[in-house]
Amino acid sequence: MSPTYLWMLRDILTFNQQSIEDYAAVKLAGLTLGEYFRTRHFAPRLLIDLRRSTGRRCGSG
Image (cartoon, rainbow, N blue to C red; front, side, top):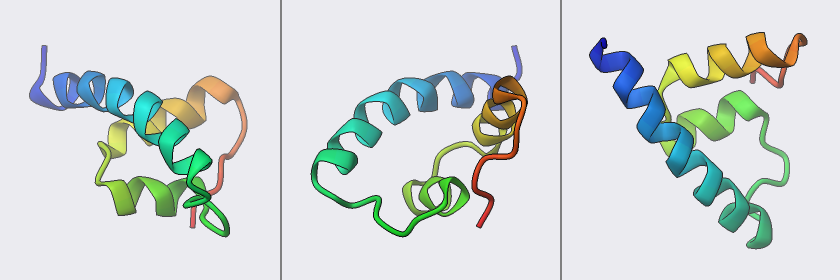
């Protein structure tokens, strides 16, 4: 497994927890998904794979 893949797996777990906490704390207002990923330093590959899996373009900002 590539290091970027392992980084992405770690970020999936972190994203699942952190996004719920940030949503509850109203820290997501006005952010695109891309901005949120950059702010939280999540793996870029996770965002790319998320966009592919949804079959549509998520906020790129």
